[in-house]
Amino acid sequence: MDYKKLVEGYNEIATKTLQGLIKIDSVYDQKSVSVEKPYGEGVAKAFEYMKKLATNDGFSVDMCDGHCIEISTGSGEKTIGIFAHLDEVPISGDWKYPPFGGEIHDDVMYGRGTSDDKGPAIAAYYALKALKDNNLINGFKVKLVLGGDEERGSSCLAYYFHTLHKPDVTYGFTPDGDFPLIYGEKGIRDYTYKGHVKLGPVISIKAGVAPNAVIDSAIVRTKNGKELKEYLENKKNIKYKIVKEEDNDIITVEFIGVSAHGSTPELGINAGLIMCNALGDCFNIPLLLDFAKKYKDPNGRNLNACYETKYLGLTTYNVGMISYKNEMFNFVVNFRYPENVNSDDVISQIQANSNLPIFPDEIPAPVVYFDPDKTEFIKVLAKVYVDETGDTKNKPMTIGGGTYAKEAKNTVAFGSHFPGKEDRIHGADEKIDMEDFLGSMPLYAHAIYALGNIK
Image (cartoon, rainbow, N blue to C red; front, top):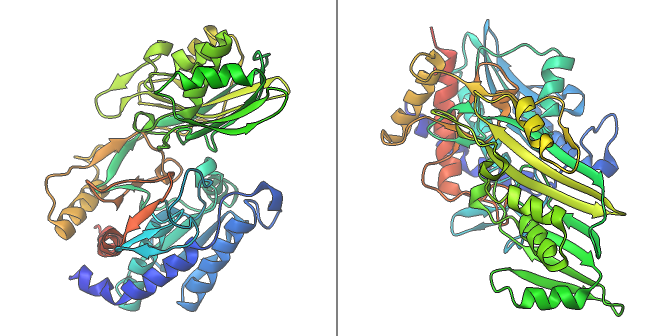
């Protein structure tokens, strides 16, 4: 079957649909949370947008008490699942294009969610619609489940499976990773240092927007402003800007870094750690110097907590958020680890060498692993990728990132990021190349059909 020809008639409507969805700010909003809208107004608007679309296109729709939207078609003993999400990380950094504009420039669409994960969700939706419109879903059911809280820990799918007791799928994929496919993911667990401390002349700190993103902006308000300003003027390797100078020698400074995904902290420049080192050095604050030293190496070598396995690789420790107000200090770490690591043991080991108490998340996101040589649906997806792209050089992989594969059984990440392409997930000017957006649609149509027809 020619899957490229099957989906090409949907390219224009898919593009317009994605632009409309990008224009909805679906970042979690505590202020507008309600029973009907557990993740706030923006996520609810994104769900309503998809509900209207899917209902008009003849799909069955279940709103799942506002936690997810399930779009389904077909029937049979076998169920193929597609799990994507409509929530987004908050806006940070300097954007050239409007983060909720969905503007296309030089065949690239810009906006929060274009690649993570609205773009892939819409590509999967129209792949499914193309199959349905051509009567190619026979003897099996397909459900596209779009969650609303993936970026904060996937409580949406936890509700879907454990509160609503939705059945597990026979085979599934999430378009929230990389091609060719991802057959293994590290475990993930956030932990937070919390304590009442005095940080010398420092009045307040606000750094980072989410545990799973490298801090690209750290703002500190402090006394002894002249001293800090002179210190920074002599440090040519520190990027910063003076936000405000007050008459009583109080100064507000923003330390500037480069954001990256929490699974790859080595690709970013952590403004929070730069800030800790600068304040600690300038004002002789041992606690901040200690944090800067311990977390300088993103793999945990300075914590004496670096571990590695053949398939899932090294542990990573991303400092994602730091705050200080009224002498209460919080320091949040996004910890990712391979299959031979017990997160309780590692955190206890780190706690033994800490001056502040550590509070870990109660339930870690589990390790995911399927043997790529022995698991049938993995082999099917790998063949789909080769058949559609002709790429035999790039191979299935494992990652440090966490996807819905941790929540949904018999599921792996399949695209939508193509090998060798620039990735701005969680960063400023997030984008998706239109070639990749439209090019993923035949892969998803082929994947759904092939999984549905596994004997």
